[in-house]
Image (cartoon, rainbow over all chains, first blue to last red):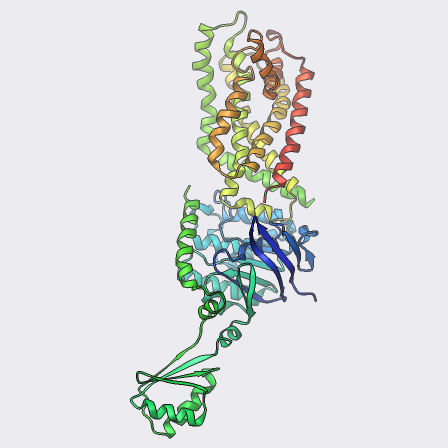
Length: 330
Length: 251
């Protein structure tokens, strides 16, 4: 089977600004694929091109084996998309929104009711289906949009910042939904996100995009290990003895003593730590405390983009949330 | 077949939303009353035309006015869809742009026709010449007027990206089209320049055709009925083409 998505030198310029730059990417069937990047890195532009609402300046891509330029009708039938900004009709009920979607995508009439029931059950909105969208909370709207995106059995589901503007609890719920989807439906899920934790916990593979180019692409664990692995920090009164011991037994090339703490840099703490403990107790050195530093996706992100997403997040989000709020007010 | 289903659902959405907005329906019902009974009465006794009931004279004009304003408003509603994101949901669906435009157009046109029809019972109140046959004759003319006007509104919505231009439409489209259509005064006694500008206004032909049908012998038409209808047809075709083109270019 061909890959579900393949882009070939995909480029999009807006004036002198190149939002997506000669991007070539392959996504396999059944993956949960994350696209990370700072604001303005080209994530949404890439998604817009893949779902055929934006034409590339040059290059092309295939989605589910269909060309996004010449077969956009087939591409659109193959994909479901949940946009970053709300795209429901707030003056209609949940049920009506789903019914419209079924009509637009020509879902067989005999199946519409069953499918609507099952997607509503999936996102746990059965009891609110008859209510107007204007009475839904932000998280509920998002869930309805996901339900809507699934109604026509897409092969690929695009989620553009699926948890933006949600409180931590709703975000956790959303992650559960996405995991469940991956398990239950035979579907490729592509999500863009700002949240490092989201990428780490949900995605099989992650691409980090900056200035329209892919700067890193791999499994989250591989990306994190690529930064030189974990740091084991041991607190003791006998730092020098511990230091000498570790140098002798060669647990690591990189050991430091600092303020009564011994820092050991290793590829994977999970494997090395038990050995260290054995050596320490054999040498009868008293350890007061011990803790581990795993590089997280944020470290990976800073490493590749030179930007701290935590700061970005704070700035970017206030703007976005304010925008969303303004849109909801009517 | 799938395109027809898409068109149907877009049509249904427009009509549902129109009927749900009770304040707008109330307004649609009451505004013509003000024109007919206050403006109409005042004019009838100050600037009356010999042999013609002024209220009966402006009645077809008010039908056109209600349709004109609603058509522009409904057309512009696409901007709302853009602003609130729903347009993206439609644009990313497998339905073609032409079908989306067509669905929107017949949906908005249905609303506009309802708006026009709401006014008809008032004809009896002012003692105008009205019966079921006249009503049936008026409908196709109203439909021709509606299509073109809705397409103008949709075209503006495709070009304009926000509501900031909405006031401009009121000043530069709605009111001039209304005033220059002969809806409020006959074009028989106006200066030459005003007459020529009015001839450029498609609504002039709509008002004239509607008046011909509704007032019968009491009214001397500016143009023969077939001519007015032909002009409206050409107007519709042009505006539908322009509108589809403008809409298909939106991203």
